[in-house]
Image (cartoon, rainbow, N blue to C red; front, side, top):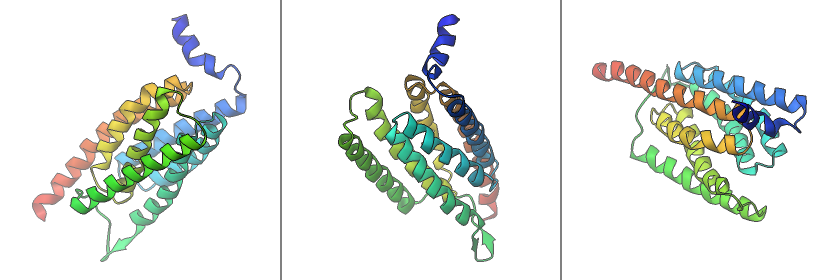
Length: 209
């Protein structure tokens, strides 16, 4: 038990109280954001924006440049998603839908471009020293694509989140951000529930189409 406690607390031994509190706040707001996404509530974006802005600072402080880039993108895409979810299309709000071939192509392009960009950033900062750095390039691409799909209410975004969360859970524990590691466990559970919830919503609409 002591070993487990030490595993969680050791990385925070030199962290300031402010940074610990900011990470906890970012975690709470991040979980709330995913909960709102599950319920298709527009508050997913304002809560997410505050959480990701906090994470930009936290990740930069921990020299996690790939994660900082992810959260800068999240902030920008949250603003875009906020606009899209409020946007009126032919008098109706944007609805949950399946991705078509064009959407998938865009998601793949976003994934590939993002992964390549992170590789260049990590090479520039000479950061390819740990196995986690290589996984970062993959998860960053997945999360970028997922965020774009979510902003456009494509149900497949949950599948991207699920894969990314599974990979991120051990990564954040290894990086020393224990609270964030726990957050990704909650994210994984909510992503599974979110996919099921959106699938039910989509199935109810399809027979009437």
